Every structure is written in structure tokens, then in C-alpha cells.
Image 1: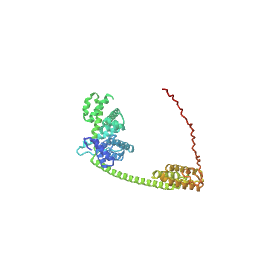
Image 2: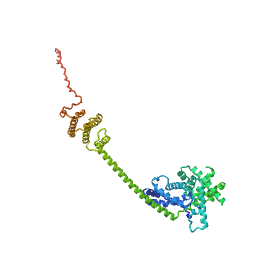
Image 3: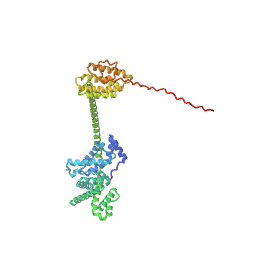
Image 4: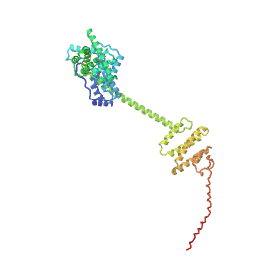
Amino acid sequence: MKSSETSPVNLPIPEESRLVYQAKSGDSEAFAQLYDAYLERVYRYVYFRVSDDQTAEDLASQVFLKAWEGLDRYQMNGSPFVAWLYTIARNLVIDHYRTRKDSVALEEIIPLASEDESLDEQVGIMFDLQTMRDALHYLNEEQQQVLLLRFIAEWSTENIAKEMGKSEGAIRALQMRALQMMAKHMQERKCNE
Amino acid sequence: MSDFEQVLDDCLRRLTSGTSTLDECLSGHPEHASQLKPLLQSAAGLMRHSREVYVSPAFKARGRAKLSLYVQDRSRQRARKTFMFRRFAVSVAVLVLALLSVGTVRAQSALPGDLFYAWKLASEGVWREISSDASHVDLVLANRRISEIVATADDPTLQAEALHDYQEILARLQSGLDADSDAQILSVLESHRKSLKDAGLSVPQLDDYLSPEENDGEIVPDLPQTPAVTPPVLETPQIPAVTPPVLEIPVPVP
């Protein structure tokens, strides 16, 4: 892992529609292009919902296998393709927690750091990331979903409201409570150090 | 929405769009700064750290290979399923066709009251519908009904059923009579009458279609005889001859 400092760029809608249409017709190469375009977003989303990188990678891969499997059910005139992928990812994460317990040691979840970062920097980044992950795990499912869609997927409040079937006001309220709980947890963690 | 919620929402929007930094947001709302700071830090931390999470090229390549294998395997499975389904569908179709054929053949010898009799009538209906010569089919069907009437002579109920169907066919034949088919139909009906007579039966409606010459007089038609009507003789009244009166015109005397 290293800081890429870039946000994934959305595929232009006509391009995405063309690829989805081709993939729905059985074109695996078109689906591979969708994989290339959206893997990072899906991975980031999953990463903050689970405790270790290996699980995040497994689940992110599974998202695309499930997507290929259920591509016939995806409505092209409905929500964007990436929103559908997030929905699959969310369900997989929920299933993951239902079916297995997390008992991963900290050293197992430390991701690979790039060679140009000093050890202190690497440890600092890993620590911050883990703190974020832990703090997120204190939130309930809806609160996690709102924060991840808002600050990791970088969706607008309006789109999150549509995706979650709530009013924008309800999403803002959820977002505020989630940030308050997260801040409180991080504060407590700092005090304990 | 409270004032604080509005401020928070505004700051988050500016943070996510990159138009303001965390410090700029806080300095813009000093009255809420202490409350805002931990929340904005959390949000900014999430955004910043999410960008530190990236997919390694090795994982991407592994995932792509896995996906490719999965897609190929699924395609094979799907092709196999499609093949199996087609084979199953063809087998079912052949079986249904065979059952229909056997059943239809078997049904042709059924008599009224038999299990397959309704099937026989249905298959005859289909035959008549798709045939280009419905009159010819009707003649064949009429022959069959006659055979059934004779065969069910000892069961009046079943015989009545066959007779009813025969009468329906007769009605159809009557409506289709023309110069070309007349002779052929009448000769078949004559043979029916003979068969019925041999079995000691009589169908009154049958005699409607046969000329008196063809009727050998042994089967007495049950139809009422229409009495001969003699046209009334009109007696023209005698009109007496009228003699015009002679007018006497006085001649003026000059």
C-alpha cells in the first residue's frame, strides 16, 4: 500500500453503458474492463469494513464474480453500475461477518508499504488506517454505509439518500451522528495511548 | 436542520469538493469550531486515508486471472446447461409427440363410452380443420359414426351419442351439397341407409336427403307427409253487359 493521492475516475456514462451492455451479452473482455475501472473503488469500500487486507481482497474479488453471475439482473436504466457493485460489496461484508469471527492479529493486517516511505511513516500510516477501521467498526451498519459512500466513494448526500431509500435530512443526521461517534472513539483511543 | 447541522453540511461539502481546507472551515465558523473540529477531522481522515488504500498490481492481476477463469468456467457450465436443457426439451418433445401419435392411433378404434372416444372426436375435429376437403372428411366421419351406431346397438345411450354426432355431420353435408358433390354424397348416404337397415335401424333425417326413387320403400320415413295442396279455383263473377243510354238531343227548329 502506498499513497496514490488520486481518486478513481468515473468511466464516462456512454462508455460504461456500452461495456455493461456488452458484458450482459456475454462479452467477458468488456466485463474485465469494468473490473479494471472499478476494482479500486470496491476494494477501498471493503477495506474499511473488514479488519484485514486479505479479507478485503477476497471480498473485493468476490464482488466481481457475483456481479458477473448476476449481471442479467442489473437494470441499466437504474442506479449506476458502481452503486450496484457497492450493494453487492455491502451484502458480502454482512455475510462475511455473519459466517465468521474476526480474530486477526495486528501484524497480519499490516499492509505492504512502498519502499520510498520510511519505517516511521509506514507505521504511522498503518496505525492511522487501523484506527480508522476500528473506529468505523463501532458504528452501526447504516452509519458505516453513509460515511463510506460519502467520504470514500465520494457520493453526494442526494445520491446516498436515493441509494439507501432515505431523505437527505435523514442521511445528514446519520452522517453527523456517525462522525460524532467516530471522533469520540478516536479521542478515547488517543487518551489511552 | 439546526444551525450546527447546516454548518457541518456546508463544511463537509467544501472539504469533499476540495474548495476549502479543514482550517479554513473552522476559521469561517469560530462559534462552532470546537464542535466542528473533531467531526471534520474524522471526515478528512477518512478521505485522506482512503486515498492511501490502493490496489496492488499483483492483487489486480490475480483478481483478473481469477475472474477470467471463473467466467470461462461459468461459460462452459452455462453451455453445458444449455446443451442439457435442449437435449431434455427435445426428449420431452419427442416423448409427447410419440404419446400423442400412439394415443391418436389408438383412439381411432374407440367407441362412444370408451376412454379414448373424446380424444378420437378431438383428433377428427383437428383433421377436419386442417383438411382442404372438409366434405370428404365429413363423409369419412359419417361412415365412422354409422359403424359406431351399429356397434352400440345394444346400448341406447351410447348409440344416441353416436347418432347425435351423425346427425350433426348430416347437417354439415346438407349445407355443403352442390352439383359436383351431390352424387357422391348421396351414394354414401344410400350405403349408410343400407347399413342401418341391415342392422334394423332407421335414421329419419337420412331419408330427407335421399330421393324417393332411391328409397326402396322398406324403411318408412318418420317424417310427416306434406299434404298435396290443390290451388283454389277462382271463380270470376259474370259482369252484366251494360247498354249505354241513348241520349236524345232536341234539334232546334230554325
